[in-house]
Image (tube, rainbow over the protein chains, first blue to last red):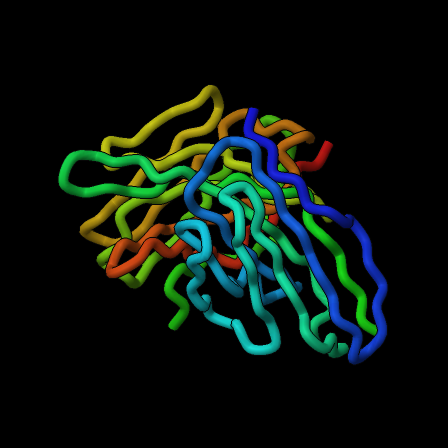
Length: 119
Length: 111
């Protein structure tokens, strides 16, 4: 079974603190993603990565950065946490499946989530 | 307009009922579709992929209508354990791959 592991299930931080959220997957997936989920807003993509040392902005990258130094690990960094970053953070990975001339990406596998509260 | 739209519900149905959810998408470049299930305060988990020809997995049937740009999920013989939020996901491949989630449809199956 694919396993996506997030380092912390629950965190409480203070405004202005630097926050690291770690994510590790064990299935050699090329693609990794960070989402946040808020009531009524659904899942919103923060950043994603299709390869080591590669990153691309999602829909809401402001206030966040990421790092992917190894294929299995994708870290989300909040440089200076703010109260509006209180949320559930979900890491996900997916394999790239080549289908002839049109490659496509497979289903997402999620970690258990990290519930962050910023006071 | 949201790229992927779902009726948020809740859908309250008795045990044994058949219930259907629809999801519409606006980006015709969407290539792949999935239904995910999410239990309260848990991560989303894949329920099933959606194929153009339609596909069935036990009590669950998924359909894709590209002409009308919607996908559907049918649950037959609802169980109490089916109570959850069902998320519709489309994957676009214009440039880079992007998974677009609907906000989810909440289902409550009542005894």
